[in-house]
Length: 333
Image 1 (cartoon, rainbow, N blue to C red):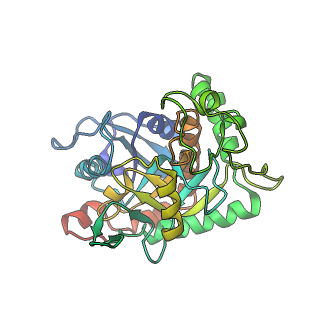
Image 2 (spheres, rainbow, N blue to C red):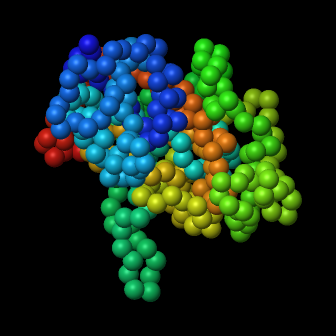
């Protein structure tokens, strides 16, 4: 059986689609634990990515949001006391108004000097006759991870990323996943104007109920020869306990804060579980939500996470403070 002391990287997913993608990008899967802390309610997948031993946990079924993510991270540190940093890897809603973000792309939480790398947009106060005002900021990712992001960013700029090829290799090894995790038909990547809401029940696809009338769509040029597809974007990720489905609010927060992505877990982690947030884009944070791109987006985020770990040496990880010690001392840095 595996020894929890051997694991230094914590990887957290929110849903089973993301959990499967994370497992598929392990270079080696390890046996399960013989035992764990009695107050730890998580179930783990253990394995190796490159030179790093990684512990992966998923939020309990239908338990989404900030509190659930915080509980999973805290429980992980009860058993895996040698974890030095975390990765929150999965899907999110993109904001296509600030950058050319498309379905299947990846957004990586990167430092914004006003708001950190993650912005909790439902934490603050509203003063009479004035707009909502955030009252606190979340911690930035560890410097080690910020440095790895910068290094990988330069490599992608010089040589392009190989995310799509990495996903194809996973699906070739495990063809039973192809239907759910392959790249969908580009025709399903439709960006509607922010005033046009989904025309039918939420479970019905936009292809069938919203149509392709150019008066409701934002028409975008195809990516060019040397453009990465999927592309990786770096910037502010907005997090809260509520799902963003309003394109008008989406665009307002993009204009005011520079938000590139919305999700529901990261704000529960940043101040106590030092981590980087990596999100594959499966929708545009509007009413036009469906599951068509969820599998591919989860794979894209996991592929980026694997590339990132490949930039970090085990000796640098070992030099980081243990998250369990930081949590016990009430520190965030």
